[in-house]
Length: 251
Image (tube, rainbow, N blue to C red; front, side):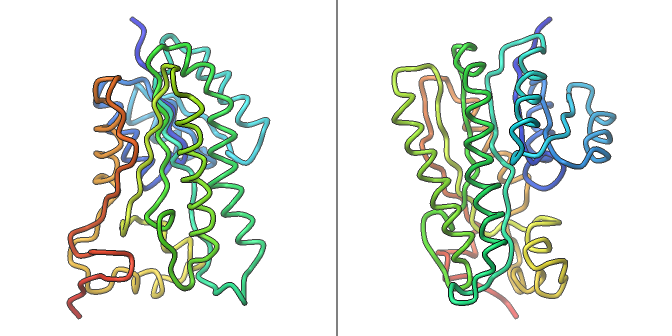
């Protein structure tokens, strides 16, 4: 029997990995997309309903191959989760590392556009497509030291909002999810170049930051509403984080 097919980028860790597991448990055939082949192979060994695709969302050739794999599976491609992204550094604008800013734009923004373009024909063909864009509260408000990341996430949010307007009248929903503070194994560590102390300081004193599975739960919930229901934007923060600049910490 054919299965509903979901494509998840950034699937080798964090929110992407948690989303793959939840979707597989919900009966989807999941195309798990990431750059790290060893992690994808382990995931495919763990879950028989996972099809691994090693791909970089900044590569036209890789994304074209991803669309070919997804389109060749037995079933409609109904869901795309644009999760691949990340932050590099916390430099102020006057000290901007332009290479880092370029990387954040290429992955968060152009990666989302590239994958969406490639898979949109399949999503529309299904008659009940959903595109989930993982942005951030940084896409809604700026903060000191976050100019590059906030700029990329603001742009990603603009893409989601524009796409929703452009697809109006066609059978494809566009959902934007904006997490606040989420503690994962890699996000802050990657942002600070592997500096574990700096990464830990982000969450210091916050007893219950969100975790990857909290956001995966939100993704799957929005994607599994009746198709006439579109959750345009879902902002998700831990209880301790009342706003981007106000976090309760017990130190």
